[in-house]
Image (cartoon, rainbow, N blue to C red; front, top):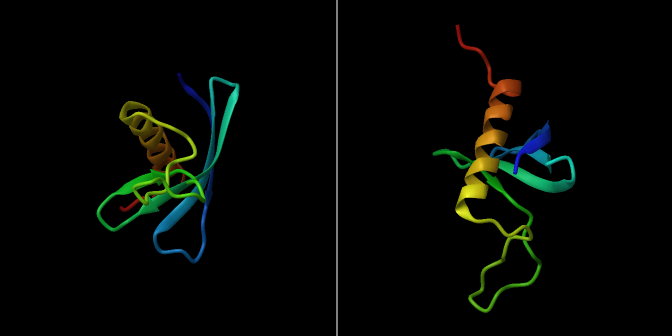
Length: 90
């Protein structure tokens, strides 16, 4: 599995959400509505969640992921965001 395309749109007027992201995996699967969040301690991706709660009162991700896939997507998204938007400090 490889991310073959990524589109990052920086958000305005939102302190925590840095960007809206969509990715294409292996030229054939589009995952849209990914949010890049900065909680003050770290940056991470948040996937769209279901409107319905599980029996344990949590909202499940619409896109099921194992930790390795989530870490891969998160790493690629954060690296691309930093490449596009991180200010160069001289």
